[in-house]
Image 1 (cartoon, rainbow, N blue to C red):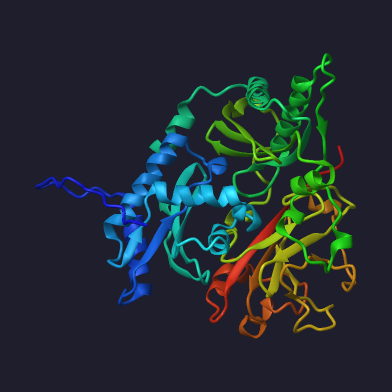
Image 2 (tube, one colour):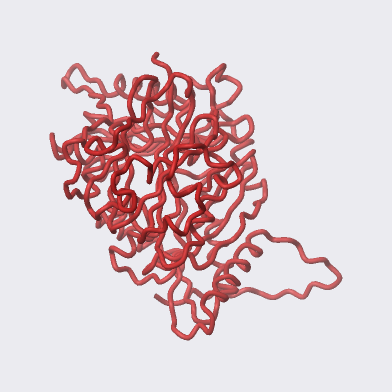
Length: 485
C-alpha cells in the first residue's frame, strides 16, 4: 500500500499566536506514542485508520467525512519515518473486502480480529473513538498491532469544536409522530421484499441500553412497517419475529460465529428470503434527538434512515439510561474475537423474575474475568467465583466452543432479575490468553461476590491492560430491566 502524501502550502505568519488545533494535538500525541513504542523503527510497516461506524455517529455524514480526512492528514504529517499511512480509499477497500467475505461479521465486528483472520497487510490498526458526553464531543485514538492485538499507542480524549454538532442542533427537528412516519416511509420505500422482521433494539449511543424512548420508538416503527407492507391484493404481510433463540443444547459444542447471530439462525432454519433485522442508535444533542435506523437483510441488502426529532414533545418518555455508570465504563478492549450474547440477543430487555444466561464463544483459549455492574453502579466479580470445583481452571474457555454463565452443568447459582433492579445493568468480561489471577489485586481474584471498592472498580480496564505477557480482549452485554407492561 503506497504512502499517502499530503502537500500543504506554507504561509509565513508573523506576530500571530498559534491557534490550538485539537486534531493536530491528537495526531501528534498519537504519533509520539507510536514512535516511542517502535524505537529505532527499522522495518517498514503500514498503518490504517479504521472508518467511523456510520450507524453510531453523533455528527452528520459530511462532518464525519471531513473529520476522517483531517485525521488521515494529521497522521501522515507526523508519522514515524518507517510508517506508511493508508489513505481513506485504501482502508475503505479493506473494509469492503471484510464485509464482502464475511470476515468482519465472523469476528463479531472486531476490526483487529477481522483483519488478522483475513490476513490483510495492515500492521497497525488505528481505532478512533468518537463520544458525545454532556453535549460535548470528544475523540481519542488507539493503535493496535494487528498480529498480536497489543495496544502500542493510545491518546487521551480531545474535545472537538462544537461546530461539528451545530448542524444537528440547528436543523429543523420533527415531532415524534412525523419522525416515526418518515422513518417508516423511508425504510419501506427502500426494501420491497421484506416479509419477516427481527427487531434487534434501538440503543442510546454506544451503551447498549434501551430506555423508555428507545423501546417506544422501535415499537412504533415496527407497527408502522407492518401496516406499510401489508397488501391485501398480493396477500403480502410482515411477520415480526422475536430475536430469541435457545442455545442450551449447544453448550460444549463447536460453533461458528453465525450460530450466535439470530438472523443467521432464522435464515438457516427457514430460509433468508425476505428476512431483515432492524437496529437503531440515537444521540441526545441538547433539545434534539438524532436517530439512525438500519435494516439489514439476511441476503445482504440494507436500508437506512436518519432523522431528528424535538425532545420537548416526548413527554415522560425517558431518553437517558438511569445507570450513569454505563457511560463511565470505558467500553470493550479488543484484540481478538470474543462473542457474547443472550437468549434474547446481544443487549436484551428482561423483566423481574426472569433468569439471565449469557453465552460466550472465542477464537482462542482464554481465561475469562467477568464483572457485573448493577443498576445502582455497584460492581461485583462473578467469574471466576468461589463455587467452581476447579478454581484455577474453572474460568478457562476452550476455543470455538459455546460456554455459558451461569453454566447449568456446573454452577449452583442463577442470575435472577429482581424487581428492585429496574434500569440498566451490564455483564462485562475481559479475556486473557493466560491465567492472570495471581497477578491481580485480591479483590479481582473472584474469591467472593462482595462489591469491589469503587476506586478499584473504576480501574479494572487499566489494571488488565497493564498485565504482561498476555493478549487482552473483552465484550459486554447490557441488560435493560423493565416491569411487565
